[in-house]
Each structure stands twice: as C-alpha cells, then as structure tokens.
Amino acid sequence: MSSELTQRLAVAPVDALIDLVLDDDEPWWRRRTCARALLGRVPDDRAAALLACVRDLAATAELREALLAALSTPGRPHAPELLAWLQAQDGVEQPFGLDVAVLRARAVLADLSAALPLAELAADAWSHRRVVGEQSIDALIEARGLTAMLTELGAASLEMLAFADPRPPLRLLGVRLLERAGADLKRALADPDVIVAQRAYLALAATRGDDDALRAMVHARAPGHLWALAVLHRRGPAARPLWEALGRPRIELPGVPADVRAAIVRAYAPGERETDPRWLLEAAWHAPAPAIDEDELLRRAGEALAAAGCQPQAPISAEQQYQQGAGTFHTFTTAAGTVTVSTLGPFFTLTGADPQAQAAMQAAMQAAGFRHIDAALAAIRVDGLHVYYFGTREPLDVGTLLFYWQD
Image (cartoon, rainbow, N blue to C red):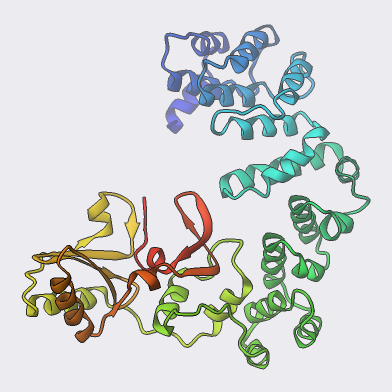
C-alpha cells in the first residue's frame, strides 16, 4: 500500500471503510487494504459484523488476517468473544499464514494459554514465522509478566526452561530470554538439539569473556566442546591450535574427493541452523580454495568439447534453462549429448545415448582438467550440512550441491 493511499485511508470515514470491507462484490485485495486502515478505529457497534467476516471460511485468508489485527484490541466489548474463537482454533488447520495471525492476536489479547504454541512458532523453520513468534512471546511477557508465562509453561525459572525442559522449542525460548538478560549460556552449547546449541553459539560469539571456561570445555572434550571451539574462533584467531589438537575433527565422507569437498564447503557452510559444528570449523580453517573464474571455466570446457569434435553450442545457465531462480551450473548442448559444468569448480556430468560419444566427451573434459561427477559420486550424501532446497533444510547429495538450482 502506497504511503499516499495509507494517509488517505487513515482519515477516511470508518463506516465507509467497513462497508467496503464487508462488500463481497469488491475484490479481496481492496477489502484487505481497507481492513488494514481500521487499526485502532473499529467502532463497537460494527465489530460483530467484522468478527463474522473473520469466521467466514469463504473469505480470503489475507482479508481475515487484516481484520484480526484490527479487532485485536484488549478491553473492547468484542474482545472476549474474539478470544474464545481464537482459542477454539487450536488444532484447526488454517489457510497459509492465518495460523500465525491467530497466535499473534492471542498474544495481543494477553492470552497466556498461547504461550506454548507461540514458543513453537518462535522455533519455526521459516524466519518470517519465527519473528512473529518471538515478538508475540515478548508482547505476552510484557502484558502478563515473565513469572506468569513461566508458570504457564511449567518452569520454575528461566534456567530450568533453557537447560532442563524436555521440549526443544521451550529450551530455545529459554536461551533467547537468558541471552537478553545477559546470563551465562555455556551450558546450552551441550544441548542435544542442534538448533538450541546453535542459538547459544551465536549469542556467545557476539560477546566477550569466559574464554578460559570455553577452552577448558575444549581441552576436556566436554559435551558442547565443538560449539565452544566455534565460539572461540568467532571471538578471535587464537583458537586454531585447539582445533589442531583435537585432530581437525570433521564429518567423514568416504568416496568424496578433496577438491569436491572443498568446493561444497566454500559454497554452503555454515548452512542452515541444523548444521553440525564440524562444518563450521572446517569452513573456518580449511585451506582456502582458489577463486573460481566462471568465464574461464566455461571457456575451457567449450574449447575442450570443440576440439573433440562435439560441436558445442553456447552454454546455458541454470537461470536461463529454467527461466527463473538461480543455480550453480551451465549446460552445453553438443552433437553427442549434453555436458553440465558446475560453477563451483571444474566438475561436470554427461547425458547422451551414445556410450562411445560420451566416452569421447568425458576424455576431452578430463584432459582439460575437469573432474567427472559420475552417478555413484553424485549420490553421496553430505551428512550434517543442512542446505535450503525447495522448502526443505536437509543434507543434500554431492550432485545436487554441485549442480544446484532454486527458483
């Protein structure tokens, strides 16, 4: 919504806005725009009709979400009825995004019973949902107090919530609140849930102090010592000898050549929140791989294929091939099949029906310094390194990482 339109609607007659919101003949986006202009302006005598629209399953989720925000005002006559409906949505599948709006509204209305689902929302895989969960938890604490929220969650203290609760989302919440209070988070580095430990690592890495205690964890190889080492690395350059003394711990990938592994580390570490800390440490201290000159890489590949008589056409990028998104490969169409070249390093794959022609292309590419990523190598999963891929955040195989595309 443009700033000019926002200013105009902010002073538009409320009844006219509500009439348009309730008009089913109007397009949903216009109704939503007017609903957003009702924040703090809903008259008590019109609230019931708007609440009925919120309950209307035929209305678009975007409109219902905007109306929830407009209606969620504590102390108004309609607030108890609205809260009862919101609480009744527990376990009810909602259209995309409306579940977040429901929980946000419960927080605004100071509903302590929303504390658990809000904590789970604050641990969501999607950052835009996490932000709403965190902000709503903070609003709930401001409205009802920290003690009341901890009681609702069954914790006697923030420390118990962060370090002893059996539910990872609640431990994550405890760590976040302890971080805000400036409390000691080192115990959370040993959390069995990687996401909780990673949150503690990020918090500690942004501070100073306790280096001796962290070094002691590393020397003793205590639970969480790899995260402690990662914190020390982020705080300064003196931590590498500790990594060396540990034997350069890493996740073994039998069958994956060193240059392939290095290219993947350079491109993807530290990965998503669930990534094993050994990948972070390897990315920090692995010998730097040479910079990739993509144009030079493609030139070499094209010349090799041309010299082999394969008549390659100009390479097509992943973005051009799929007409959207971004990727890490280019594809040469040749007289004998296709050759896909990774932009992460001198790696290629082949497709084509003629084994003899494929053998010739493979020999030409290998002679030019390229490594063939065959089916066996491509299928090896890179354990512990979590990478976003079409809505998932799991370890991917070598082939997907080297020849990656995301819309």
